[in-house]
Length: 406
Image (cartoon, rainbow, N blue to C red; front, side):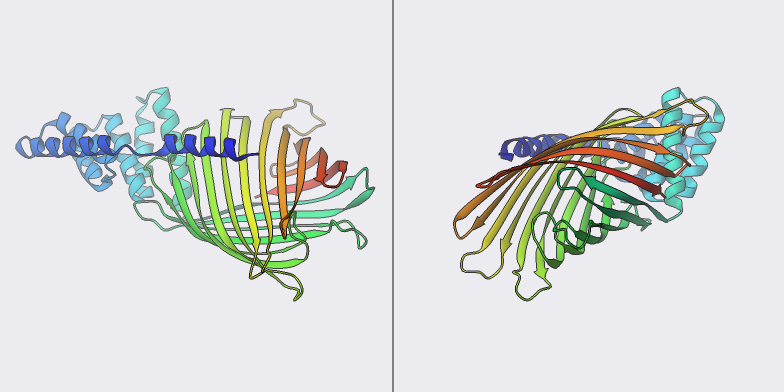
């Protein structure tokens, strides 16, 4: 059902990010030619500029920095060369030196508006990376109510993202993420669920810019109770590869491939091997508006069974949000409104007998920041489930929560 759009997205991602070998070989040959000319005429400033530009393209940032240092010494008022020198030091992980040259370029008063924007972005990134260790996260506490089943209960969600800069030329970071969520509607409910996940591993930035592709190899540990697919208590382990590419200020593409095993904590429940693949794109037409299209495919297969139980899931989700201000003294100033639509299918195969579960949902939410990092949020979502063989079920779910971003 979702194979075609997922394959189309894979093809688009490949076209966006694939390197062109012929162009790389031609650039290497051109760089070598310029270098040989510099040996004959070492004071030629145009050759210096060309060699620095080609060195950046070849990711030889040390050669670029050395050449640009000479050029800036000869032309101290050349702010373009100084910005390029700062970018080279940024790529080498020398953030303090990069910050010095960015500040000098800004203070010159000769930058174009486009250069000012670029330098401000680099300075902010350089200051953050110079700290070496950075963390961010969120915590949400709320209450949910489902109208059809008349079921209600409290929930808690939270996550922490901790990044340690390793300080090398590839801007390697060690990224550790922890996420936790729980919903407790009451002892009589079958919808009680809890899950926790810890993911850690190195992330490489494959470009000199603050934008560009990033690749993370990770290991992951988890624990969950009654998730969307498996009932019961399980621990899990996995490994994977995550790719993200903030192409520019507007577009970001990402993909994530993971494999692992889910191990039942109760002796009577089976273990499962799993495979997961996520793919998506985010588009920001403005600073305050964001659209995100994502697709997910996963498979779970029972381990060591003569007739294994198999689950296959696929879903597509479109989400949008817009931030705005309300100029009323008695109301919070920062607001964010959002909406989503999602459709998915789960296929369960037990001994050759197949059962399909189709689900689609859509909803709206509104968030108001009562303080700089603390907000209140209310949301409503309509969920429709169709089981074959079986029947249909519809549910309207309302939530209210308080959140903290840090």
